[in-house]
Image 1 (cartoon, helix red, strand yellow):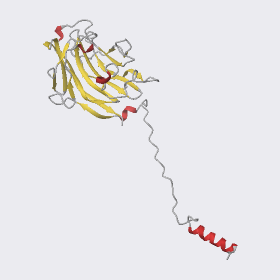
Image 2 (cartoon, rainbow, N blue to C red; image 1 turned 120 degrees about the vertical axis):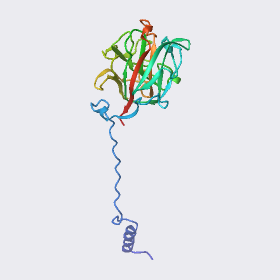
Image 3 (cartoon, helix red, strand yellow; image 1 turned 90 degrees about the vertical axis):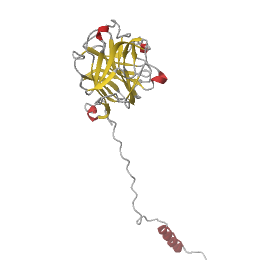
Image 4 (cartoon, helix red, strand yellow; image 1 turned 90 degrees about the horizontal axis):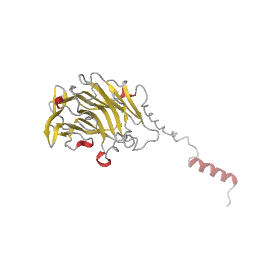
Length: 291
C-alpha cells in the first residue's frame, strides 16, 4: 500500500527530532581561549636591569680557590702575545680576608723568568650583567698586564678570534691610572687593528681602591661600565646584518682572570723587575640575569 503524503511528513518530523535536530538537551560548547604570551622585555628599557637577579657568584670568602668554580690554565708558551710568564697551577694565588690575590713573581719557572696565574671559570654564561670588583697592583713601574675577560666556550673548536672575546677590564702598568674595555671577533680584532675598544679610560684610584668592572650583555648589545651600571663607557650594538663573524655573542662565554708579564702590549716599554711581586685583588665575580 502506498502511504499518504501526511503519513510521510509525520515520519520525517519524528526522524529529525530523534536524530538531534534539536540541541535543547546538549550543553553549549565554548572554544577555549589560548593565553596571550607575555611580550619579550625591552632590553633598551630604562628599568630592564632592575629585574636582574643574582644567578652565580664567587665571593672568595674562604681560604682557598674553589675547585668547583675555577681551573688553572698553565704554560709558558707566550699565549699568542709574546708574554714572558709561566702560568702555574695554583702556587701564585691566595684567598684571604674575603679577596682573591693573583700574584706575578720574578722567578725562574718552567723556562720562563716570571711566574703568574691564569684562572678560568668552569661555568659558562650567555647574556646577563657580569660584574667583577677588583683592585689593580700597586703601581711601581712598567711591565705587567692584568686582565679580567671572557672567551667563547667553543674556542677549542673554532679558535680565536672566531670564538669571540669580551674584555671587561684590561690594565697595563706603563699607563697608570687608566684602564680599557674591548671586544674581539673575526670581524673586529687587534690583529688587524679593527677591535672595538674604549681606548684608555681615566681612573685615578685604580691601583689604590676597589672598583666594579662590568658588562651588560643582551641579544642586542654589549655595554661596559665602571662602578655603576649607569656609568657606561663603551656600547657596542649588534649589527643590523649580523653573523658569527661580527656577532659571536649569542653563545656561552667563560671568565678568565690573569696577570701577564711583558707581551706585545704590556711589554711595550719593557719590564721593570723591581715591580715584583705584583698582586691583583678580586673581591667578587657575580653574574645577574633577567629571567
